[in-house]
Length: 269
Image (tube, rainbow, N blue to C red):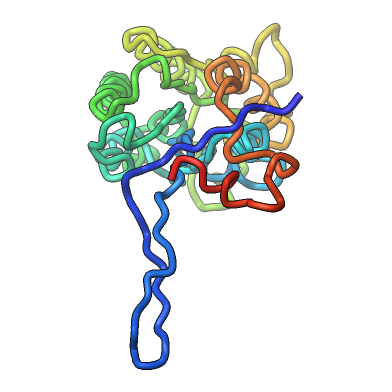
């Protein structure tokens, strides 16, 4: 069964000009721009790396092809304090219709939970982290992104033995503890509940029933291939109901009139 298709048209136009002999300029065409719905992935390195081969972001983008643009706004090393400052520059203050944002994931905490005495540059105190997440939700709401379109994601657990080896290679002591990451995960869950948004609690799910969560991590902190699959699976469970009913963008190729393709491809102009 073919999915229905849609054209989402903005008011912006673009003119294609052609210079003929004698410097005469002809406007060859003038079409309204098709605006695709967007899913924005906002987070730190775990989000930035999600478009790598077999990454969770790439998997979500694959599932939503011809329905949404999945936009990666992952920023390696960033914390919620910097994210809160930067967010208005990423989404602007347009209305929801102009932004055309269908969903946003907010995935911070792995840097915020760095130990203050070992990594003060990235560390954010627990209470401030919670307030930053709430402020991010308020900023999204001011841009027309309602709470039901925001999904918070907690930091995953930290495998201290493996991550310590990475720290030593960089000339520093262990700078994160799994128990502290758990406190930030709990704060994320509470902030999401306060905002009325869904939350994907990776810290809890990856350690459920005492399973070996190290298989989900490549270096004790970032996701392995299995960890990416885990995130993609559980995140899709939250996104699917919101997005699968979005229409197929532009006609199926077999439905394009070969004698008059303009009638199929330029409808709504």
